[in-house]
Amino acid sequence: MKHLRVFFFALLLLASPLLQVATCQSDSDAEVAETAEEVSDLGIVGEDAQDFGDANFSPAPGVETVCVFPKNSARLVTAGEETELLVGMKNDGELPITIIAIRASVHLPFDHKLLVQNLSAQGFNNATVPASAQATFPYIFGVSKYLQPGSFDLVGTIVYEIDQHPYQSTFHNGTIEVVDSGVFLSMESVFLITLGIALLVLFGLWVNGQIQNLSKKTKRAPKVEVGTGTRDASMDEWLEGTALAKSQSQKSKKKK
Image (cartoon, rainbow, N blue to C red; front, top):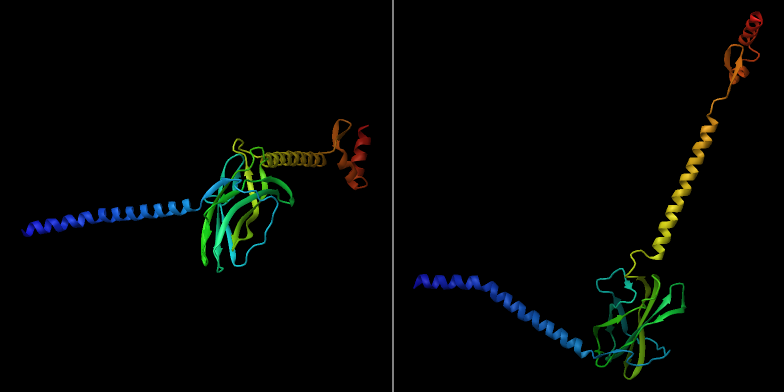
């Protein structure tokens, strides 16, 4: 009987990790279900749910927003493909916030008045942020596949209501990098590579010219024949007027 108790106790010890795993799995499943329920409560109604036109509203006091590109810290946007970002909102006010929609647009970086593309607005039905709380909302957008790769400015705003008064806050006003999925090198990269090759060629030509000029300067002067011997012309100029030059002149006269 004693051995049976020991065996049963050892069996419980061996099975305890499995029980813990099962408990963890049930807890994670409950969290996933709760998260899915929260996401379903957002009531995303898709693109162009409401036509806002060119209406602009002021931000509400006590509301803070932030933007995150999940697993995309470089903020690379592939032309013609969907890109997801998350909009975080913090409500420090005393009234709940009703989220209406998220919208964005693409502009040239040096002048925001030059609009490149109006992105689709994403509307919500049941998305709210209670007082003294915070929430995160997804926004999926896609730039035109015909957009040339390069740097552009993305301006994103979230439209909401507080006590039936419309407001909007800008959650992103910065640069994104648009890339083409079908081309490994952008036009800017090709230009930089071509410029680098041209500079290397010009530098090589300059070095070649300097070497040729240096070789011309160091080239020896031509030799001048005197009688049966040869003498360096530069040596004659250096010896001119010296005693050695006079003796050499006398020797040449005697030979004649």
